[in-house]
Length: 309
Ligand code: NAP
Image 1 (cartoon, helix red, strand yellow):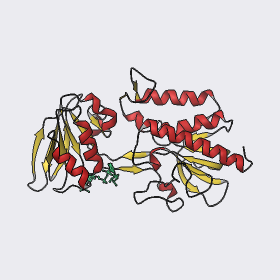
Image 2 (cartoon, helix red, strand yellow):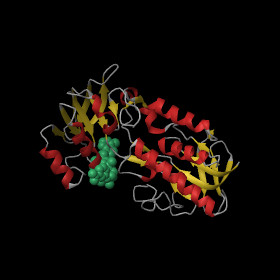
Image 3 (spheres, protein in one colour):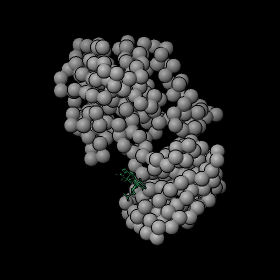
Image 4 (cartoon, helix red, strand yellow):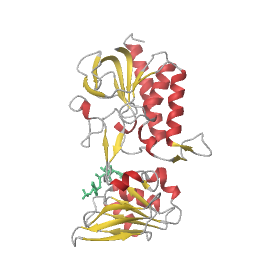
């Protein structure tokens, strides 16, 4: 298969890029990847995406974005891209189905995946009290105690955000020393609603249909007890989905693709990156969508400059 432009990923960044590219008559093909629709498909209600005054369920929002792309000339493939050669143009991509795809321009919007504890009940109660996004879901936890797992900047930032809603936030950290920066530590220690449980790991999530507690093990004393909480938040890091491009595109130490400030251009001409795969700061649906738009405009202009429009 040969295409003028290929989009990898079908979250808000990928679908917004596809929408703009298709409306520019570039007939993009979107490789949807392992989680079609991206991270929003594992959240429940989205209240902070502009244009939906009553809120909208994450999966429905993504379904609507996809339909909007289909109104124009966007092709979709369920296949996942598992190999890439960006050393010459057209770029060569290999899919898990064994197809070779040639593309003059590439928009990478493969997102980042939140890390989970991988406990059975954590996965079962995901979206029903278990969340890896306090900004998305914090509002639903009014006046109930919640737990936050992690000891980095994200855990503390999100714990502080949660204090706006929750009656208290118990930060559960596996060591007795935080990884987070001093300023975040100071803020968290100064907030009377934030409590810390040190040297502790969550070993089970309790509750039938929603979370009503977590079982915690103190790793030093090797003893377990239950905490009554209405929600479990995780902030134990994200992994950008960019391994397939390792060694070919410039990345930061955590594997996020580097883009030129103020643009979506990567270190390889003709390759553009958008959304969480290049953003560990904002990580919102609306910022991902905005950067998908940037990538589409950058790709369109670049193709035009190459005489490939
Ligand atoms: P991070 O710095 O890698 O911290 C992850 C935390 O989760 C660590 O405390 C780690 O424990 C813990 N953890 C990892 N795996 C775990 C597991 N399986 N079970 C229990 N705990 C586990 O990730 P992050 O907080 O998402 O931050 C990522 C980057 O973004 C960092 O560079 C951070 O500084 C930056 N950031 C900055 C800000 C800000 O400046 N306001 C806000 C957010 C993020 P250990 O400490 O024991 O390893």
